[in-house]
Image (cartoon, rainbow, N blue to C red; front, side, top):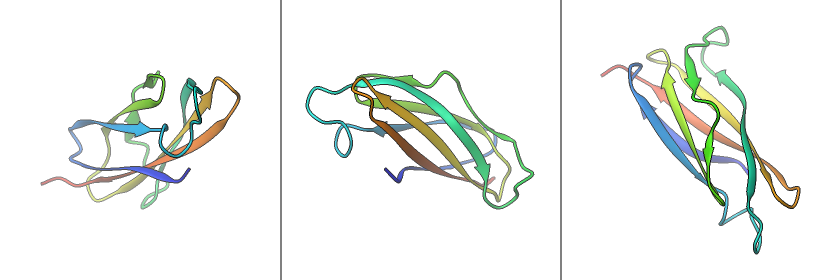
Length: 102
């Protein structure tokens, strides 16, 4: 999978992004077994670690809800999530997050 989510937020906001794995990845009766955070990278300032994700990541049979907090105004981030299915599939999904104080 590739970029499956985009968020624009202010630094103080807590926003969620829903990832739907059913359409492009899960086949037939396959279901999500586990979803975990792989990495958070600030693409504009590699030293910035102010963006966080609530763990554990909430998920159902085919979707995951990723809660994103914080960040520094003017910076862009990539949140990488790993999803594992009951039949052994593993997918990596990315969420692009832009933070800007308005």
